Image (tube, rainbow, N blue to C red):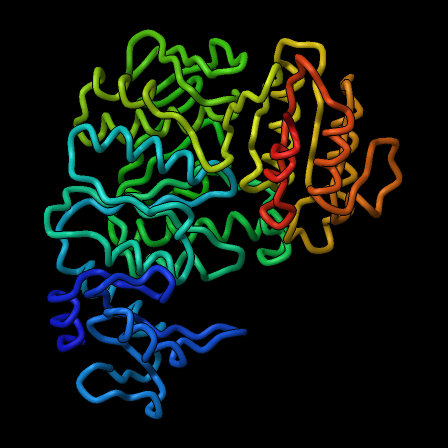
Length: 425
């Protein structure tokens, strides 16, 4: 590992995709179910890679490849070795909902005061976590690492690479039920972050409104609490029509006007304040960071098209986030509300029942129109518009030609619900 680390120090830009490769990059030839990165080693070198890390001897190119037993394990071991050279706070974030928004808010807050390196996009898996760590340079003062998971022991494996000094579980909801084996399994899986903090005597940031986080965090010496009634940071929703306004009674003074759509973003805002204050960011800088942050990538994004307003929250969905989004949408001012919802994935045996519950939630309110797309929405008897694909739903929406309407577009990544918006004039 020492030899590979010396190469990395000389060529610190790591790439696993030849399509994104730049001259001087260090190429890791990963394998997957449908590809073998070793096949692309020569192409990577032709494109300017300094070296290619491979794990099949038949692809050795003298002086240009580094042969290891397993490329993925080498990538993860290199990331761990690099992490061990960095004596800075490492904040790990996981949870069922709100991980990325919370990460982005925290990054915005910490970056006002510290050189902060953060997970880019959704690089939060067994490849993304080490890649994120390997992007951290010597000038770093803070690191914020997002960790996604859909089965037990996954968060634990990321913690062994990232060695978090601080951790935050946004919540434990109905996500990836198939892999985790129910809500209790979700708590056990996400709780692996708390296990790492207990073992490493780290600090947890916890939304104290959630009783389950009280018991999950037992044994962690230092817990920074935030919530709506109790904690180091206390705040509540002043209004969210459509943008969230937060009234603080502890931690910050007064009100913060965000550019986030939905009251369900309150815990994410409170978390960012708690983290910022803990690390000594001034209240004024925290406020400016929160008010200046505008979401992107189809996460609680407010998009205007013609006379219509669209709440585009199509990056992902699970029963918890879907229910909150519908309920929040129902409370917004406006008469012509249209729901376009895509099916939810990775729910296993609970999937039909969870989709049925979403339909029951929809039925509690009055809508101008409702379209349900794909998956288990197709297997349930309901009176709403039904489509196999987002493209079909988009064509229907175009024929509807709504004016002065407000639309909520949400669904799991696999349904690609953001395509619906392209059909609006």
